[in-house]
Length: 160
Image (cartoon, rainbow, N blue to C red; front, top):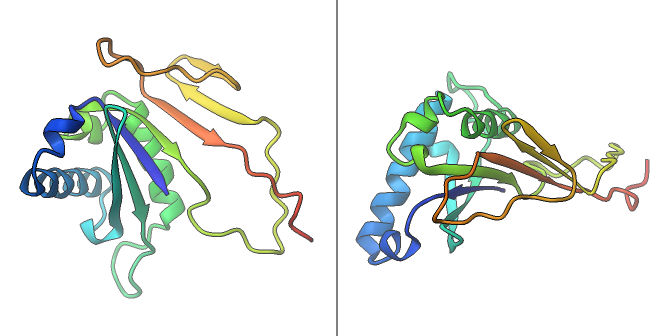
C-alpha cells in the first residue's frame, strides 16, 4: 500500500461522487503515464483528509503484457518522482500537488524464508534533509518539500 499526500482541498475533491471519480481517474492516469505503465496497475482504495491522502495498491503485471515492472519497482519509481520537482509526475495535473509518498507496508508479503531488518524506527527522506525520527508535519498554508516516510518493519517474529 502506497499513500500519496497531495496539497489539495479534500472537501472539494470529495464534494460529490462525480468529482471524486474524476479525481481518481485523473490521478490514476497521471501516475500510470509518469511511470510508463498501464492504468490497470493501480487501485485507489481510499481517500482521507490531511490535505488529500490517497491510498493506492500497485498490482502485479499481467503475464504476457509488455510492461513487466514489478509492484516494488513501480512503488520506488513513484517515490522518486514525488521527490523530484522536475519529474513527469510532478508536471501532471494531479501530481503537481504531491507533497510526499508513504510506503505503508511491503508491496508484496515477505517470504517466510526472508529475514528482513531495518535499523531505524523510520527513515524520512526529504529533499536535502534526512531525519530518522522527526517527520515534518504538513501545514496547508505553506508548501513543504516532497517526502518519503518508510515505516519500521519488525521481522523478529519471522523464523529463518
